[in-house]
Length: 101
Image (cartoon, rainbow, N blue to C red):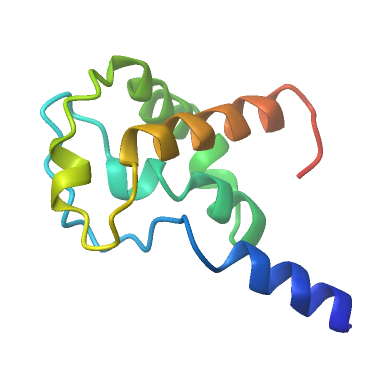
């Protein structure tokens, strides 16, 4: 049990999106506050939303990111939002390819 708590503690600290939405709107139409939390949602919530056809299309919009930095400038947690989006997108693609979470 303590091992699981330590894993949770590591996942829930540091460089992750809290979903506050201050980064929005994205000029490219990316749903940042959902996409930047995809990895956490896959692990901690029903994954239907992210893995559905609509969810996959939402995540694919990350490919349109121009790294303009507007989102990062607005983030109260100082996150590198474009980098976080890319990491979450890669995570979702790996799950869709059959890699376990």
